[in-house]
Length: 302
Image 1 (spheres, rainbow, N blue to C red):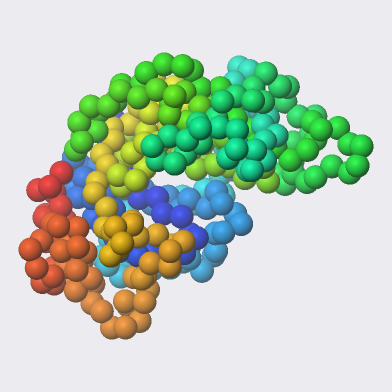
Image 2: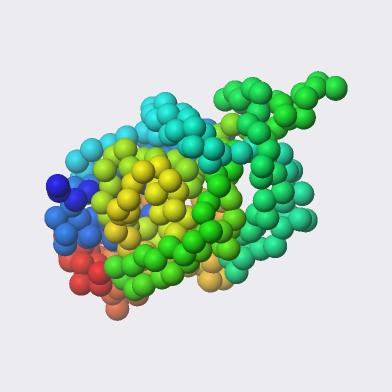
């Protein structure tokens, strides 16, 4: 069976230098290990996703010279998420959580990354009487079972051993890292952790190449995929990040300078690639580089 990796940006803003570095690692891995590349646009966050950003993702990647063999838009396949949720419910692995954001912050400890370690306050409760795509607050006197709630997965208490192709071996227990985590949020949207697992299974992803900022999600995603029936997880590689002057990773929420802005300012793809290689510590100067040269440089660092 041929291998397959994916580049999976969310259309909540324009691509920036951090996305470009990730794309270079994805396509370099595809070159080195003879993988096909799947472009997955992860618009599970329907509140923040924008159609203009979906179009811009494709345009910016093509402008840079990237090519991919297949493509999907998450919102076109929400039915696969419903199907997976029903399978988990049938195994009694899902329960509603009525805790507000404030309650979660006040009643649960946090891990080293600042994430809540859910202590299971709502565990043992039955599934709600009604589940809709958008949950609303009940009228006065309504059943609390119909109140806004998330859906959490019952994660087993066990150590997940996994190997990173760049960083080495890890042994992590998601129960201690984060506890039972949401797979659907309080307004009925699918969470990242759930959506990425379903899609990686359904789309046959064999290699996951992504930034070190998501490394701590790996054990919980492997555990969730096991509950979904995937016994052999993908191979993982987490690459270094480009950070700003304050040492923080580039992000759309922090309004990172976008590739679109560079294009409009007349920056060439070669100039942008050279700049990103330099900022990532993969080149000693910002000398312009074509895509093939950039991929060769990254390949040598895999």
